[in-house]
Image 1 (cartoon, helix red, strand yellow):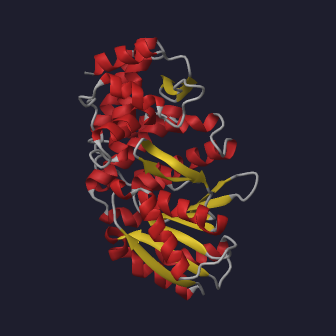
Image 2: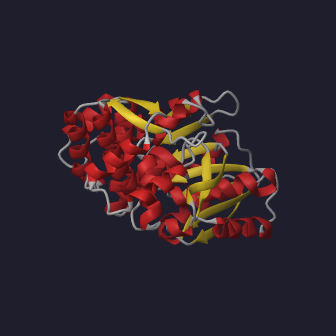
Image 3: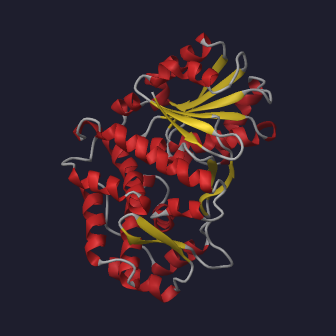
Length: 364
C-alpha cells in the first residue's frame, strides 16, 4: 500500500492507495489512530453499495467497529440540503455520538455531502473518505472541502472538514462507467497544467486514456499517486484556500458556469471542468499568457480522454452574472486561474468584462 501524508499543521492524515484496500479499511482506520469500538455510519449510493457495501461493513465490524449503512440517491441533482438531512436523520436514529464517525463510500457527490453532514453533526464528528470514482480519488476526497449546491451556484453551502483517513482502492474503478472515468481524467490533466509537466507529458505519450483498461501497465497507479501528492502538497500549504490552493480551481470557474446554466447533471463535473479548461486556455491566449500551441496541446489531450471541448450555447449575459456568484469572487472581482505554461498557472484578478466577452465570442 502506498501512503501519502497530507502534512497539515494540526491533524495530518494519510492517503492510502492500494489494490484490495476495501478489505483492509477497518485495519487502516485502526492504524490511523481511530480506535474501536465506536459507531460508524457508512454513506453510499446504490451503484456503489451493491458491489462494495458488504465488504466495507465486514471489514469495519471485524476490526471492532459498530457499523451501519445508509444508501442515498445518486447524482449531482441530489447534492442539496435535503439529502444532508437524510444523513443527519440516520445519525440520529443510530445515536451517533461525538466519538462516532462517518465513512463516505462513493464518488465526489457522496464524499462532499457525507463530509458536510459529519462537519455539522454535533458540531463536527470524524469522517473517513473512501472514494470509488477516479475524480474523487484524485481530487474531491482529499483536502477537506465539503458541501452542497445552492440554486444560485455550485458548492455555495459547505465547510472545511478534513478527513481522518483517505483510502483509495483502484479495484473499485473496475465497475466505474467509462464516462465517469473520463470525467476523472479532466482533474488529472488539471494537475499536469498547474504544476506537473511530467505528468502532462506522460499522458500525452499514452495511446488510450478514455477508459481504465486502455492505460499501459503502471500508469493508473502513477496517476493516482502523483495526483494525490499534488493535492496533498497544495492543501498542506494552504488548508483553507487563502491563497495558493485556489490554483486547484483551474478550469472550474468557467466549468461551474457550464454546470449551473445547463442544469446540474447535464454534464458531469469533470466534463464541465474540461470545457472550462479549454475556455480559460482561450482567455490565456488572448491575454498573451501562453501560446496557441500550448492551448492546442491541452485541447488535444482533453480530446484524447474522450472529454468535451466545445463551449455550449449560453447567453453571455447569463455567463457574466453567474461568474459574479462564484465562491472565488473577492470585492466583486472574479479571480481566474490562468495558465502561463504547461506546468504553471497564476491567479488573476484583473480580467475585465470585455475580455470575458471576447473569450466567449471566440469559443462560440
